[in-house]
Length: 240
Ligand SMILES: NC(=O)c1ccc[n+]([C@@H]2O[C@H](COP(=O)([O-])OP(=O)(O)OC[C@H]3O[C@@H](n4cnc5c(N)ncnc54)[C@H](OP(=O)(O)O)[C@@H]3O)[C@@H](O)[C@H]2O)c1
Image 1 (cartoon, rainbow, N blue to C red):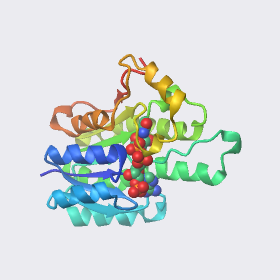
Image 2: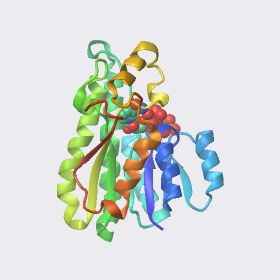
Image 3: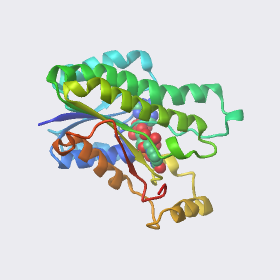
Image 4: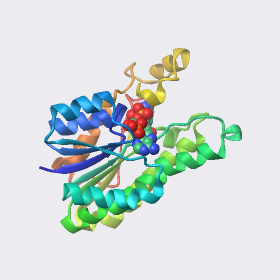
């Protein structure tokens, strides 16, 4: 059985990826700050294949030890899905420096460090999968999301160069760029703003977390062995 780590697995997209990965036969280490009721229920239903590990990814200095503990406890690792992120919004002129720092730490520095340390067992196995969750905002832009957009563009850049670096070791690195999904991260966006986002989709609706999760489980699979350095966009066509 292949073991994968999914960050931000307590809610939203991370939880949807976790549920699909379990169905497809992976052993999943679900990471988040606090166990949600929904993830707890999934752990109860899958006691042999789903494990929760609490970690606050803004605690950058502890990531090395956390990664070592994961590798020691769960053994060989097949994949890592860097999904956890915060979506703090606000116009740059008034955004607090603390919030800017936190966005950069949780959305960029943490996934880079976690990848650095969890890559080691993959390099030894000469096989593995790394999937970074970016956003269409990385390439389209959205007023009030300049720092968030910068973090998501950073992950896409990280993907491409790392794919070149570790390809010879049989490890693929890819990005999934979701469009707008209705999760806790976006619950403030309602009314006409939400309707206008829906209208931008040629399909007339939004991508769901489950739709995006399918792209992630494809990239985790053997079928995606020759896909690396790429971005799969799942946005119901809104950027077409
Ligand atoms: N929703 C959208 O429309 C949308 C669009 C494009 C891209 N995305 C991307 O999709 C991914 C998932 O977003 P989502 O909508 O599912 O967000 P969400 O519902 O807000 O969930 C975020 C997840 O990240 C975890 N997390 C946040 N801060 C953390 C920290 N400091 N340490 C550890 N875990 C932390 C949360 O767990 P805890 O609270 O338990 O720590 C939660 O599981 C993100 O990378 C986001 O940028 C979302």
